[in-house]
Length: 346
Image (cartoon, rainbow, N blue to C red; front, top):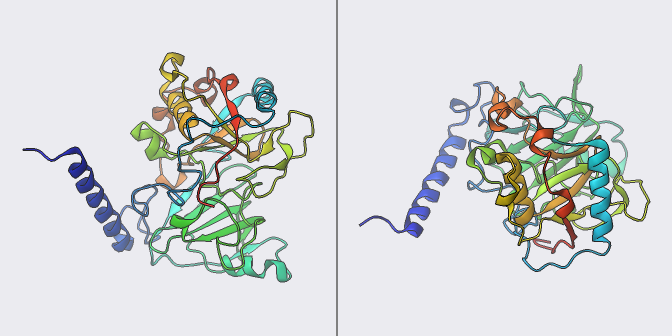
């Protein structure tokens, strides 16, 4: 008699967990390039699961019956307008996020934060004074120059904006550090690190760069099991939870506050939309988990993992030779609904 589905799933998860532990323990002998003693992108996670707490809003499906946010129709109208005027895109090789997954013995370096002086910055300076950045690491292409370092063995993560090398070492325009990533609710606040503040982090909202990031292994698997991060050209002033702050400065009645969650209705038949595979995956994630407005940008854009740490670009194959604009050409923006995000995990 064969194993039951439950027993088979349990055995599979145990094997994956053992593999993850082995990959971390072998340090410099594994899937890395031999220079950083680390693990290559997506080879292992804390338990084979997503970033942040399982109860985080990033990882919890939205309730089927969730009332629209006040002025939902106005926000959707404004989003559709911005798509029409600026276009829609999936950031991959530019303006996205390379995630460097490192082992426990990765040598550490200091990162200086521009303008970080005075008592307000001391905790942040201390948090990024010893970061396991691989020597071959490269920030994302584009003026944002973003980068994430994730160390599963210590359950810690660091992120940077406008990161660059100088004669004196690494320098960043903004930074954030997070310990106990697997228990974090999914944003920077006092729980992220001793002395952490909501102004920490590399985004406009204190929502981490890893939050809502479409991972390469997810696209290869054919499904995205978390909420998605979105950026728009004209974010509204103010913010709503889960955003902790905002850089939006548009004040029309329909301007969308950063932190707003959109979702596709649960009864929408996505199969009938005839979207390309990646477009379908994005739509299914938007229906089940939602889309969260995280940042401002030049167009309406999702974030897919920057492939630089892998040493090759898988997106031509994953996207079926189509451009991100073509993939999103028939995305049902007008069918989205702005909803009040339940306060999962804090």
